[in-house]
Image: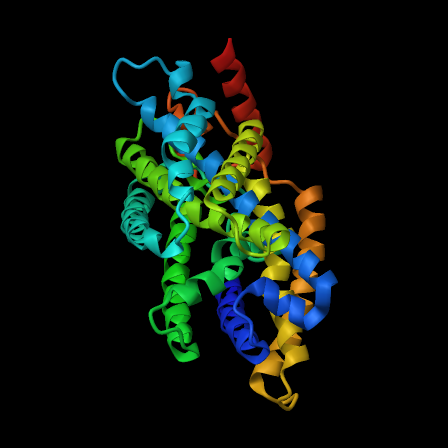
Length: 396
Protein backbone atom coordinates (compact mmCIF):
# COMPACT_ATOMS: atom_id res chain seq x y z
CA UNK A 1 0.00 0.00 0.00
CA UNK A 2 2.81 2.42 0.85
CA UNK A 3 4.46 1.63 -2.48
CA UNK A 4 1.23 2.36 -4.33
CA UNK A 5 0.78 5.68 -2.50
CA UNK A 6 4.46 6.54 -2.92
CA UNK A 7 4.08 6.03 -6.68
CA UNK A 8 0.61 7.47 -7.32
CA UNK A 9 1.37 10.87 -5.81
CA UNK A 10 4.62 11.41 -7.80
CA UNK A 11 2.77 10.31 -10.94
CA UNK A 12 0.03 12.84 -10.31
CA UNK A 13 2.41 15.67 -9.41
CA UNK A 14 4.57 15.10 -12.51
CA UNK A 15 1.55 15.71 -14.73
CA UNK A 16 0.50 18.58 -12.46
CA UNK A 17 3.87 20.30 -12.97
CA UNK A 18 3.52 20.33 -16.75
CA UNK A 19 -0.06 21.60 -16.37
CA UNK A 20 1.29 24.39 -14.18
CA UNK A 21 3.92 25.18 -16.79
CA UNK A 22 1.20 25.39 -19.45
CA UNK A 23 -0.97 27.67 -17.30
CA UNK A 24 1.94 30.00 -16.53
CA UNK A 25 3.57 29.84 -19.95
CA UNK A 26 6.88 28.62 -18.50
CA UNK A 27 9.19 25.81 -19.57
CA UNK A 28 11.18 25.03 -16.42
CA UNK A 29 10.48 24.19 -12.79
CA UNK A 30 12.35 27.28 -11.64
CA UNK A 31 10.53 29.69 -13.97
CA UNK A 32 7.20 28.15 -12.93
CA UNK A 33 7.84 28.78 -9.25
CA UNK A 34 9.33 32.21 -9.96
CA UNK A 35 6.17 33.27 -11.80
CA UNK A 36 3.92 31.79 -9.11
CA UNK A 37 5.65 32.80 -5.87
CA UNK A 38 8.22 35.35 -6.96
CA UNK A 39 11.89 35.54 -6.10
CA UNK A 40 11.68 33.98 -2.59
CA UNK A 41 9.98 30.89 -4.02
CA UNK A 42 12.51 30.80 -6.84
CA UNK A 43 15.41 30.84 -4.37
CA UNK A 44 13.90 28.09 -2.21
CA UNK A 45 13.23 25.86 -5.20
CA UNK A 46 16.70 26.47 -6.61
CA UNK A 47 18.26 25.28 -3.34
CA UNK A 48 16.08 22.15 -3.24
CA UNK A 49 16.48 21.47 -6.94
CA UNK A 50 20.25 21.66 -6.57
CA UNK A 51 20.50 19.69 -3.33
CA UNK A 52 18.37 16.74 -4.40
CA UNK A 53 20.37 15.67 -7.49
CA UNK A 54 23.63 16.67 -5.81
CA UNK A 55 22.94 14.36 -2.84
CA UNK A 56 21.80 11.73 -5.34
CA UNK A 57 25.20 12.01 -7.04
CA UNK A 58 26.84 11.40 -3.66
CA UNK A 59 24.66 8.34 -3.04
CA UNK A 60 25.48 6.98 -6.51
CA UNK A 61 29.18 7.29 -5.76
CA UNK A 62 28.68 5.41 -2.48
CA UNK A 63 26.84 2.62 -4.31
CA UNK A 64 29.54 2.47 -6.99
CA UNK A 65 32.32 2.16 -4.44
CA UNK A 66 30.49 -0.41 -2.32
CA UNK A 67 29.38 -2.68 -5.16
CA UNK A 68 32.32 -2.61 -7.56
CA UNK A 69 34.90 -3.03 -4.79
CA UNK A 70 33.28 -6.35 -3.90
CA UNK A 71 33.26 -7.32 -7.58
CA UNK A 72 36.99 -6.71 -8.02
CA UNK A 73 37.77 -8.55 -4.77
CA UNK A 74 36.45 -11.70 -6.45
CA UNK A 75 39.12 -11.62 -9.17
CA UNK A 76 41.48 -14.60 -8.59
CA UNK A 77 44.90 -13.62 -7.28
CA UNK A 78 43.79 -10.18 -6.14
CA UNK A 79 44.50 -9.29 -2.53
CA UNK A 80 41.21 -8.08 -0.94
CA UNK A 81 43.18 -5.41 0.89
CA UNK A 82 44.69 -3.98 -2.28
CA UNK A 83 44.18 -0.22 -2.34
CA UNK A 84 43.44 -0.29 -6.07
CA UNK A 85 40.24 -2.26 -5.51
CA UNK A 86 39.19 -0.26 -2.44
CA UNK A 87 35.97 1.77 -2.53
CA UNK A 88 37.82 5.12 -2.44
CA UNK A 89 40.00 4.34 -5.44
CA UNK A 90 37.03 2.93 -7.38
CA UNK A 91 34.96 6.06 -6.71
CA UNK A 92 37.76 8.29 -7.99
CA UNK A 93 38.50 6.05 -10.98
CA UNK A 94 34.86 5.75 -12.07
CA UNK A 95 34.44 9.50 -11.71
CA UNK A 96 37.47 10.40 -13.83
CA UNK A 97 36.99 7.69 -16.47
CA UNK A 98 33.20 7.51 -16.81
CA UNK A 99 30.85 9.80 -14.91
CA UNK A 100 32.72 13.05 -15.53
CA UNK A 101 33.07 12.56 -19.32
CA UNK A 102 29.40 11.56 -19.58
CA UNK A 103 28.35 14.53 -17.45
CA UNK A 104 30.07 16.93 -19.86
CA UNK A 105 27.37 16.37 -22.49
CA UNK A 106 25.21 19.47 -23.02
CA UNK A 107 22.19 17.71 -24.54
CA UNK A 108 20.30 15.33 -22.24
CA UNK A 109 18.73 13.61 -25.27
CA UNK A 110 22.14 12.10 -26.10
CA UNK A 111 21.87 9.95 -22.98
CA UNK A 112 18.80 8.12 -24.32
CA UNK A 113 20.73 4.98 -25.34
CA UNK A 114 22.47 4.97 -21.98
CA UNK A 115 19.08 4.95 -20.24
CA UNK A 116 18.05 1.93 -22.31
CA UNK A 117 21.19 0.06 -21.21
CA UNK A 118 20.38 0.91 -17.58
CA UNK A 119 16.87 -0.52 -18.03
CA UNK A 120 18.22 -3.80 -19.41
CA UNK A 121 20.73 -4.13 -16.57
CA UNK A 122 18.07 -3.34 -13.96
CA UNK A 123 15.87 -6.12 -15.35
CA UNK A 124 18.83 -8.50 -15.09
CA UNK A 125 19.39 -7.56 -11.44
CA UNK A 126 15.72 -8.15 -10.63
CA UNK A 127 16.01 -11.67 -12.03
CA UNK A 128 19.02 -12.35 -9.80
CA UNK A 129 17.19 -11.23 -6.63
CA UNK A 130 14.24 -13.47 -7.53
CA UNK A 131 16.58 -16.45 -7.91
CA UNK A 132 18.22 -15.74 -4.56
CA UNK A 133 14.98 -15.36 -2.63
CA UNK A 134 14.22 -18.95 -3.65
CA UNK A 135 17.65 -20.41 -2.98
CA UNK A 136 18.89 -18.29 -0.07
CA UNK A 137 15.83 -17.37 2.00
CA UNK A 138 15.43 -20.78 3.72
CA UNK A 139 18.96 -20.49 5.12
CA UNK A 140 18.66 -17.00 6.66
CA UNK A 141 17.21 -16.74 10.20
CA UNK A 142 14.17 -14.51 10.49
CA UNK A 143 14.12 -11.55 12.86
CA UNK A 144 11.63 -11.25 15.66
CA UNK A 145 8.29 -9.69 14.61
CA UNK A 146 9.48 -9.76 11.00
CA UNK A 147 5.94 -9.67 9.63
CA UNK A 148 4.50 -6.95 11.85
CA UNK A 149 3.02 -4.39 9.44
CA UNK A 150 3.46 -0.59 9.69
CA UNK A 151 5.72 -0.13 12.69
CA UNK A 152 5.99 3.38 14.24
CA UNK A 153 8.95 4.32 12.01
CA UNK A 154 7.18 3.23 8.81
CA UNK A 155 6.98 6.82 7.59
CA UNK A 156 10.76 6.73 7.10
CA UNK A 157 10.11 4.42 4.17
CA UNK A 158 8.09 7.15 2.43
CA UNK A 159 11.20 9.31 2.28
CA UNK A 160 13.18 6.53 0.60
CA UNK A 161 10.29 5.80 -1.79
CA UNK A 162 10.11 9.50 -2.61
CA UNK A 163 13.78 9.26 -3.57
CA UNK A 164 12.97 6.26 -5.77
CA UNK A 165 10.15 7.84 -7.77
CA UNK A 166 11.21 11.46 -8.06
CA UNK A 167 12.21 12.94 -11.40
CA UNK A 168 10.50 16.30 -10.90
CA UNK A 169 13.77 18.20 -10.84
CA UNK A 170 14.43 17.24 -14.47
CA UNK A 171 10.89 16.68 -15.79
CA UNK A 172 10.87 19.88 -17.86
CA UNK A 173 14.20 18.84 -19.40
CA UNK A 174 12.75 15.48 -20.38
CA UNK A 175 9.45 17.01 -21.52
CA UNK A 176 11.33 19.45 -23.74
CA UNK A 177 13.38 16.61 -25.27
CA UNK A 178 10.24 14.90 -26.66
CA UNK A 179 9.78 15.16 -30.42
CA UNK A 180 6.21 16.42 -30.05
CA UNK A 181 5.73 17.50 -26.43
CA UNK A 182 2.04 17.47 -25.52
CA UNK A 183 0.32 17.01 -22.17
CA UNK A 184 -1.44 13.85 -23.37
CA UNK A 185 1.83 12.31 -24.58
CA UNK A 186 3.60 13.30 -21.38
CA UNK A 187 0.84 11.76 -19.26
CA UNK A 188 1.09 8.44 -21.11
CA UNK A 189 4.87 8.36 -20.74
CA UNK A 190 4.67 9.14 -17.03
CA UNK A 191 1.97 6.56 -16.32
CA UNK A 192 3.89 3.78 -18.11
CA UNK A 193 7.24 4.78 -16.57
CA UNK A 194 5.88 4.97 -13.02
CA UNK A 195 4.05 1.66 -13.46
CA UNK A 196 7.25 -0.07 -14.55
CA UNK A 197 9.16 1.57 -11.68
CA UNK A 198 6.54 0.42 -9.18
CA UNK A 199 6.72 -3.14 -10.47
CA UNK A 200 10.52 -3.23 -10.26
CA UNK A 201 10.52 -1.59 -6.80
CA UNK A 202 7.96 -4.07 -5.44
CA UNK A 203 9.96 -7.02 -6.78
CA UNK A 204 13.16 -5.66 -5.22
CA UNK A 205 11.46 -4.91 -1.90
CA UNK A 206 9.67 -8.25 -1.66
CA UNK A 207 12.70 -10.31 -2.66
CA UNK A 208 14.99 -8.38 -0.34
CA UNK A 209 12.73 -8.52 2.70
CA UNK A 210 11.58 -12.09 2.15
CA UNK A 211 15.23 -13.12 2.07
CA UNK A 212 16.69 -11.04 4.92
CA UNK A 213 13.67 -9.67 6.90
CA UNK A 214 14.93 -7.28 9.59
CA UNK A 215 18.56 -7.56 8.47
CA UNK A 216 17.82 -5.80 5.16
CA UNK A 217 20.29 -2.95 4.58
CA UNK A 218 19.76 0.39 2.84
CA UNK A 219 21.88 -1.03 0.02
CA UNK A 220 20.40 -4.50 -0.57
CA UNK A 221 23.63 -5.84 -2.07
CA UNK A 222 25.31 -5.30 1.31
CA UNK A 223 23.23 -8.25 2.57
CA UNK A 224 24.60 -10.82 0.14
CA UNK A 225 27.78 -12.74 0.86
CA UNK A 226 30.91 -11.85 -1.10
CA UNK A 227 31.47 -15.39 -2.39
CA UNK A 228 28.11 -15.45 -4.20
CA UNK A 229 29.07 -15.53 -7.90
CA UNK A 230 25.59 -14.74 -9.21
CA UNK A 231 25.28 -11.69 -6.96
CA UNK A 232 28.82 -10.65 -7.86
CA UNK A 233 27.69 -10.29 -11.47
CA UNK A 234 24.56 -8.55 -10.20
CA UNK A 235 26.75 -6.08 -8.29
CA UNK A 236 28.65 -5.37 -11.49
CA UNK A 237 25.41 -4.68 -13.38
CA UNK A 238 24.18 -2.50 -10.52
CA UNK A 239 27.40 -0.49 -10.44
CA UNK A 240 27.26 0.11 -14.19
CA UNK A 241 23.60 1.15 -13.94
CA UNK A 242 24.36 3.69 -11.24
CA UNK A 243 27.32 5.10 -13.19
CA UNK A 244 25.11 5.57 -16.25
CA UNK A 245 22.41 7.30 -14.17
CA UNK A 246 24.82 9.75 -12.53
CA UNK A 247 25.12 12.19 -15.51
CA UNK A 248 21.36 12.87 -15.56
CA UNK A 249 21.55 14.22 -12.00
CA UNK A 250 24.59 16.29 -12.90
CA UNK A 251 22.61 17.86 -15.75
CA UNK A 252 20.08 19.24 -13.27
CA UNK A 253 22.61 20.61 -10.78
CA UNK A 254 24.45 22.36 -13.61
CA UNK A 255 21.25 23.79 -15.05
CA UNK A 256 20.25 25.23 -11.67
CA UNK A 257 23.60 26.99 -11.34
CA UNK A 258 23.41 28.22 -14.94
CA UNK A 259 19.91 29.62 -14.42
CA UNK A 260 20.64 31.27 -11.07
CA UNK A 261 24.04 32.79 -11.79
CA UNK A 262 24.32 33.00 -15.59
CA UNK A 263 20.77 33.58 -16.78
CA UNK A 264 20.56 30.10 -18.30
CA UNK A 265 23.34 30.53 -20.86
CA UNK A 266 26.96 29.53 -20.23
CA UNK A 267 29.90 29.30 -22.60
CA UNK A 268 31.61 26.00 -23.34
CA UNK A 269 34.46 26.91 -20.99
CA UNK A 270 32.17 27.71 -18.06
CA UNK A 271 30.12 24.60 -18.86
CA UNK A 272 33.22 22.45 -18.31
CA UNK A 273 34.35 24.38 -15.23
CA UNK A 274 30.94 24.15 -13.52
CA UNK A 275 30.65 20.44 -14.30
CA UNK A 276 34.13 19.66 -12.97
CA UNK A 277 33.50 21.62 -9.75
CA UNK A 278 30.15 19.91 -9.09
CA UNK A 279 31.49 16.42 -9.77
CA UNK A 280 34.65 17.04 -7.71
CA UNK A 281 32.74 18.23 -4.64
CA UNK A 282 30.27 15.32 -4.87
CA UNK A 283 33.18 12.90 -5.13
CA UNK A 284 34.99 14.35 -2.11
CA UNK A 285 31.86 14.17 0.04
CA UNK A 286 31.12 10.59 -1.03
CA UNK A 287 34.65 9.57 -0.02
CA UNK A 288 33.87 10.66 3.55
CA UNK A 289 30.45 8.93 3.83
CA UNK A 290 30.00 5.17 3.65
CA UNK A 291 26.42 4.55 4.82
CA UNK A 292 23.76 4.77 2.12
CA UNK A 293 20.56 4.42 4.17
CA UNK A 294 20.72 7.74 6.02
CA UNK A 295 21.65 9.57 2.80
CA UNK A 296 18.54 8.24 1.03
CA UNK A 297 16.26 8.98 3.97
CA UNK A 298 17.41 12.56 4.50
CA UNK A 299 17.41 13.36 0.80
CA UNK A 300 13.91 11.93 0.56
CA UNK A 301 12.35 13.90 3.39
CA UNK A 302 14.29 17.17 3.04
CA UNK A 303 14.38 17.58 -0.74
CA UNK A 304 12.13 15.03 -2.44
CA UNK A 305 9.04 15.64 -0.28
CA UNK A 306 8.71 19.37 -1.09
CA UNK A 307 9.70 18.84 -4.75
CA UNK A 308 7.08 16.10 -5.19
CA UNK A 309 4.22 16.94 -2.85
CA UNK A 310 4.30 20.54 -1.67
CA UNK A 311 5.55 22.82 -4.45
CA UNK A 312 3.65 21.33 -7.44
CA UNK A 313 0.40 21.41 -5.45
CA UNK A 314 0.94 24.96 -4.23
CA UNK A 315 1.74 26.21 -7.75
CA UNK A 316 -1.30 24.59 -9.31
CA UNK A 317 -3.66 25.79 -6.59
CA UNK A 318 -2.50 29.35 -7.07
CA UNK A 319 -2.46 29.31 -10.89
CA UNK A 320 -5.62 27.36 -11.69
CA UNK A 321 -8.90 29.24 -11.88
CA UNK A 322 -10.95 26.05 -12.07
CA UNK A 323 -13.60 25.31 -9.38
CA UNK A 324 -12.29 23.93 -6.13
CA UNK A 325 -14.29 20.75 -6.66
CA UNK A 326 -12.17 19.84 -9.72
CA UNK A 327 -10.35 16.56 -9.16
CA UNK A 328 -6.90 18.11 -9.72
CA UNK A 329 -7.56 20.76 -7.10
CA UNK A 330 -8.96 18.26 -4.62
CA UNK A 331 -5.90 16.05 -5.01
CA UNK A 332 -3.60 19.06 -4.68
CA UNK A 333 -5.29 20.02 -1.41
CA UNK A 334 -4.72 16.48 -0.13
CA UNK A 335 -1.16 16.12 -1.39
CA UNK A 336 0.16 19.38 0.07
CA UNK A 337 -0.41 18.53 3.79
CA UNK A 338 0.75 14.95 3.18
CA UNK A 339 4.04 16.34 1.91
CA UNK A 340 4.42 18.60 4.92
CA UNK A 341 3.83 15.69 7.32
CA UNK A 342 6.26 13.41 5.50
CA UNK A 343 8.91 16.13 5.53
CA UNK A 344 8.65 16.99 9.25
CA UNK A 345 7.97 13.56 10.77
CA UNK A 346 10.33 11.79 8.38
CA UNK A 347 13.19 14.12 9.28
CA UNK A 348 12.66 13.66 13.02
CA UNK A 349 12.55 9.86 12.69
CA UNK A 350 15.56 9.73 10.36
CA UNK A 351 17.67 11.71 12.85
CA UNK A 352 16.44 9.98 16.00
CA UNK A 353 16.26 6.45 14.55
CA UNK A 354 19.04 6.19 11.97
CA UNK A 355 19.20 3.00 9.97
CA UNK A 356 21.89 0.53 11.03
CA UNK A 357 24.80 0.31 8.62
CA UNK A 358 27.11 -2.70 8.33
CA UNK A 359 29.22 -1.27 5.53
CA UNK A 360 32.40 -3.21 4.81
CA UNK A 361 31.51 -6.25 6.96
CA UNK A 362 30.15 -9.62 6.00
CA UNK A 363 26.76 -10.39 7.52
CA UNK A 364 26.92 -13.04 10.26
CA UNK A 365 25.02 -15.62 8.21
CA UNK A 366 27.91 -15.66 5.72
CA UNK A 367 29.91 -17.66 8.31
CA UNK A 368 28.20 -21.08 8.51
CA UNK A 369 30.92 -22.44 10.80
CA UNK A 370 30.17 -19.82 13.44
CA UNK A 371 26.39 -19.61 13.45
CA UNK A 372 23.58 -22.00 12.71
CA UNK A 373 21.52 -21.06 9.67
CA UNK A 374 18.71 -23.44 10.55
CA UNK A 375 17.03 -21.24 13.15
CA UNK A 376 13.58 -20.20 12.08
CA UNK A 377 13.30 -17.29 14.48
CA UNK A 378 15.78 -15.70 16.84
CA UNK A 379 15.54 -12.70 19.09
CA UNK A 380 17.18 -9.36 18.43
CA UNK A 381 19.34 -9.81 21.54
CA UNK A 382 20.61 -13.20 20.41
CA UNK A 383 21.44 -11.94 16.93
CA UNK A 384 23.24 -8.89 18.29
CA UNK A 385 25.27 -11.10 20.62
CA UNK A 386 26.13 -13.52 17.83
CA UNK A 387 27.18 -10.70 15.54
CA UNK A 388 29.38 -9.14 18.23
CA UNK A 389 31.11 -12.50 18.84
CA UNK A 390 31.67 -12.94 15.12
CA UNK A 391 33.18 -9.50 14.80
CA UNK A 392 35.56 -10.19 17.68
CA UNK A 393 36.63 -13.53 16.19
CA UNK A 394 37.16 -11.98 12.76
CA UNK A 395 39.47 -9.21 13.90
CA UNK A 396 41.54 -11.25 16.36
